[in-house]
Image 1 (cartoon, rainbow, N blue to C red):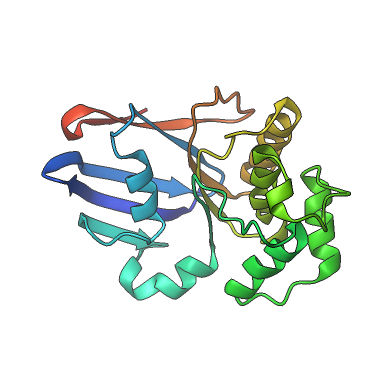
Image 2 (image 1 turned 90 degrees about the vertical axis):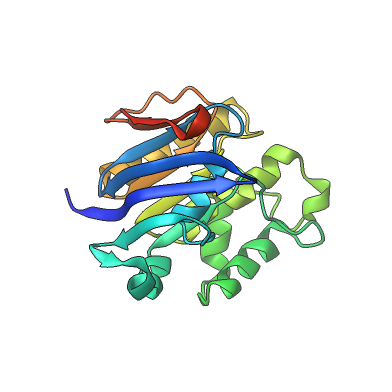
Length: 214
């Protein structure tokens, strides 16, 4: 197993409160890693740091053994981050939102690929409806369609199971399993009771910056 993303002696404070300290973490190919902890323990903050969105921390980050500051372009080219919010634009259709995502990422893409991705997440027939007319679960599915549309080895997902129904949960679990089985890496937070088919490693954040890696 090759190590992709690594954190060494990672510490972070917010408003004078330590969220976590001296955290060492390595995420390799074929691994599913779950970040756990009570509300306010820093789960989302940790994911944003590890996905290169926040720079207010102590410690070091590495991508494939190179300091992240030097390997940032390669890191971003291999990363797919989905936040707790869906990030979809209500005035656009599902199809237009995926085209917008691809334009932001500098990907040419194709309408056929976007249609296939929406079909994969159960949105066939909803492609041309404005997002404002879709349910919260359907809006979440638009964001999740990027997992199919934009193949990247490292997925960082913040509460990806939010608002989706039983069928959507089962489909996402299969997608996570297939990605890891194919050598991909997944780092996520979720309140959903995961039942992975392969190994699951946990990082548990707690009060006062305490943490455990299980």
